[in-house]
Length: 494
Image 1 (cartoon, one colour):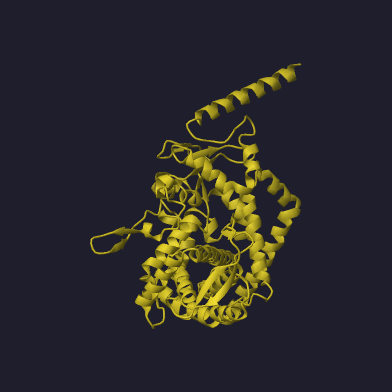
Image 2 (spheres, helix red, strand yellow):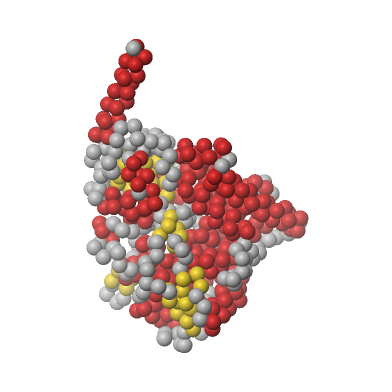
């Protein structure tokens, strides 16, 4: 009898405490929430459409912030408020590292690479590779990597497809291309044939598997489930372990081969420089894996959505061609010319506003805090800024937020249009603040080169009229790929 009374008393106390906590959150729009399990039920129901569910909740929140509590996960604060984003990523940066919960999710795959560490270790990693993205390095990247990969590999494949009138999955083709580019930049060699009929590279297949399963960890209704599966070595966690072992095995073998060959000779790729700098094998491995993952998937995802959008906006396509013809003429696309393609950059920014390569990113608070909109953050809470949702907020982009309108990235002056300095905290596609993506300029240069080179020669037209489905793994994908036909362009502005 005494044990029953104690149990009921504890149950009553926990319920009362939970109800008080929920009442404290009443100023924020939130899904149906219950004692003990929080919003686990609606979260589970919407687990396959979290992006649109979060966006819907945010659009009805007066602060553009929602607070979610569910059994088996830390309190999660999702925000589309630029003031909050600036506070998290810049103003109080030190209180919002990625945190152990985040690094645990990606730790098996990315180890201690630059994207999965905090504090002094992150600063050390960033400093180690920052010179790889200097203006001089980017000029070399255009001359020695993009020119070769585009003109000698990508364009010939598209020529063949156009002659055969053959349908191709553009997402797959761009993924192969981006994989080759980042591998050449990172490890100094090509890894994959661009021919769509050739088999998928084992390394790329392992990257895909590890990326997808790691992403599903983060979206799991109960974190305990994937942790138990990892402990037992079953299901998706077993497949993740096998994929990670394959990726690490390939990269480790490359490192050891490079150590034998370089003999302290100067190398032009990231791997050679890390080896010659005397970095430990595990450090090099984790850095290389992180760079290949980021460099391959983000640009391929952004370009896939761009080509789908541009195929539905022929006037915009014509403007891109006209700008390229005016600024490049008959000359080869060099670094300076690419930097000056402002309208093309606006089109890419607008595409990534609607379909960001990274749909969301999370930090974990070290200490209790208060966001600018009045949202209370507890120590250990997960704080997620949400580029996908931010691109869909009427308060940020107007009633026409759903339209693909590159002009919104310019402001009118007396003489012409001038590039608008949209706050990075309003559209944090490449993060913002101290952790702004080091490869931001490199990504724009690569995307501009690819778009200008392809559109100057071909028309890309999707097969079918169905709107593609946006799938947020570690980086965004188009469900089922993008099936297109490639047509030879008769003249540059046709």
